[in-house]
Image (cartoon, rainbow, N blue to C red; front, top):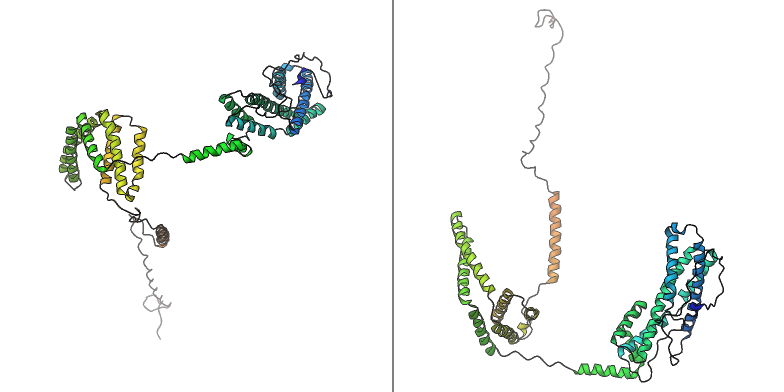
Length: 489
């Protein structure tokens, strides 16, 4: 395993100038103890795809070591390495990091063909473990394509031949992705070998499932792999079908029916009175009811059109009554109910409500949702004393409502009239058209003169101008003493 780390190379030296001052490279180390070990000889024969992938991976990693030497020599020839900036600085720092961590990380990969192991003879695995091994095999089969490795090798060779650092950057990205995936697969195969030999536990299976989903997202859930197992394994398929048949045969016992109304109702009345007596609430409730009646009478009087002084008198009477009523409510809601009486009263009242719904027949179906709401509130719990008394009132109000209903037979919706949706739609369209027509008519109508200004007076027709008098003819003696008038002959 990982023979290339100890100096074995299967590829010639790439063309590279000798480094000026090559720092001493770390001595080759043996694979770390955590490196996965190969499967024993009884393992399944690796597929051609797995073998081809392992061989290509070995060549790619061998070339990677040579490229690392080459890029270090090229970058090391740069003057003033401490003054590098930008991409050059980032590349130099990455090279230094590779010298420290790459061999250790890559040493955890397996350069042998990876295959999911088969359980050893006599080992019985859980269904989750069987599904996990199938999923691991599917993930390995789906990732044994060498296209990514070929691209990785081409980018590294292009960098060595042309000195194009962009190709080297792409190769490093592919390298990190490939190494991370293959290290995870190597450890998964190692853990799968432990499972196949009968070791491991549920915690190991859950950890392997999580890592497998990270490295191979196409393996979505154990359910799909378990379905594949059920199709392939006749024994497992029979077990699963037997379990399904047993689950279908099992039936929960029916819930007991509520006791009769004649048995429950007197007990509810008795327990309710006991609860109030133990809390000392009868005088409080009596006074509160009397105040509520007085406040209601005053409210009816205030609804009428009264003089201001009479209204003020009624309000002054109502204010202390409301204040006292609030004080009684605070005292009532703050009283702690007796625990034993409460624990018997509430479920008995709820049973009576269920009994009443059954007695109503089809009509009771319409009130089933409200009954379920009360059951849900009771199941969630009542956190404080006020919520307990409020829930007791809600139960009593609902029971009073049910007592006012009459039993019926047949469909409870027969006597309920639903709105004519089509007619409502036509009516809405007609109303919209009428509104548009009214708006157009309003726009076409003459606008009234603005308020505050008298309407303009109509202009008077022009008066006819008087005709000018005719001027007298010129001459002497007519009407004048200077002889300018007419002469009569």
